[in-house]
Length: 263
Ligand code: GLP
Image (cartoon, rainbow, N blue to C red; front, top):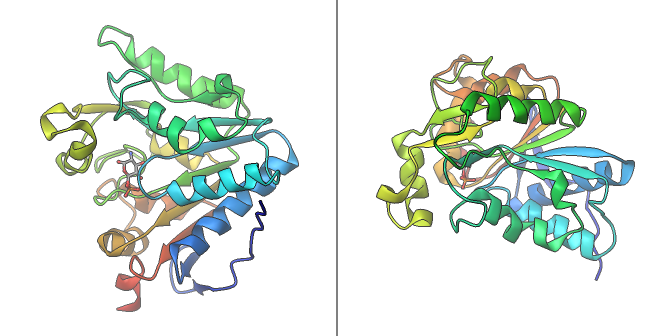
């Protein structure tokens, strides 16, 4: 089975925004572009990736699995850190991110599970600050994050850094915004079952990554994409902090870019 990464020829680059924005005719082109960059890093040697959950990265993971099956990529020298996890969910919880990552990527490639980390806090009596510090220390011990893949929440959150998150924030326990819990209600079988808290890399943890690749697809993201690129950087919309990063790229489909064309 062949897998060939194409150059992102059919993407339009917007120059009038505060960071490089690529608008793809279809989201598959964006998926392939980011997947190809990851495949390049994997081929180059020891690589540390930071990975998100949600609908946004599914296509990238599908492309990475294709690349692995086509023997174009190996995760043998990769370490991964997930951005976030709901508080109190066990690794096998059907709505938890550990199981989701297993289904969407880990089970299908040659990644050593000992090198696939998620921030974790299963019991209320655990020392939260110590768990958060341990996650930061593990990232540092791995040599820092080479490439971090990111989606954006409808309210501008990155990871689970909800509005109000400081630019200097590090991995910690966070309160989830009502709209974030509503978005997770289906997975948990009702909003009453969605945890009220999560553990997430902080904004500063994210900004420490050497490369950040952000993706947003669909009309429901157009408003937050516009805010991310145009609003003054502030805690009100944590994705605005990405604009200060030296190597960040934003990939959109036409629907998510609609609010930019209007300007
Ligand atoms: C969740 C995750 C985020 C993700 C966001 C967007 O809240 N914690 O990391 O970026 O949802 O999700 P989706 O990609 O499904 O739009």
